[in-house]
Image 1 (cartoon, rainbow, N blue to C red):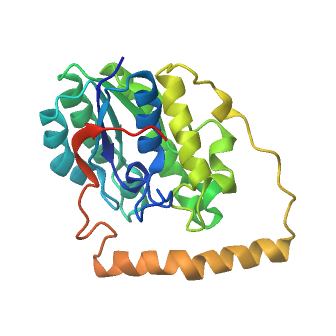
Image 2: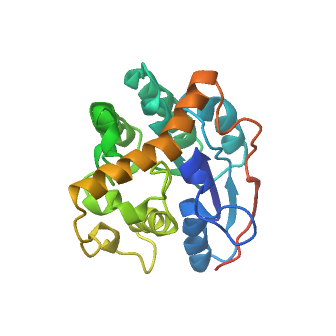
Image 3: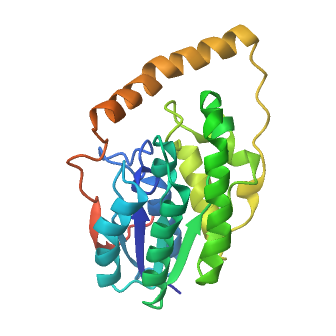
Length: 255
């Protein structure tokens, strides 16, 4: 039974695009914390994740704080922001992850990470990034178990790539997607009431005509891709000026 849960990572772990009804974000880590609190009402939870952070930043800005909180459970998810950047160095990203895995495991905590979905299915215009994502996933599957880190292997399941699991920007999960990710982590941790239902595809959507598919991609590029590229070109990050939403351990209210 876990009593001190710390979440590390970037925007997905922060919970972007999963409104909490209070002007902030809930997200899969909050949802997982609620499931943990249903098992142990004395659970305390901290979320150190900040949007836009690459793996070196997660290590530099969150690792020491996480260790200092003396957790018995840590989720550590990072690397996708690295993959999306030009000139991504997968080996360097994995080295950063491994450094975090080692330090977190040395605390005695259970540590859980995950693989990433097929970016080519979520964002068809980004098919060229597929080899990077596949390489990162393969490395996570190899390195994490060497240090006793559990891996939520989302990548093989098409359900995770369903458009309903993703918000309109296709970079962040929708509320349904965050619920699915939380369910996957709960399943890996074998929490009471968990199951592998998150692996089951949603009912198939009607296929769009070619003109509708082309128009949809054009709108996405104009509304979401172009602003993202502009931030990259100017050296700005969505995480500039943002701090962790839950930097200290505190009790969890079960939804």
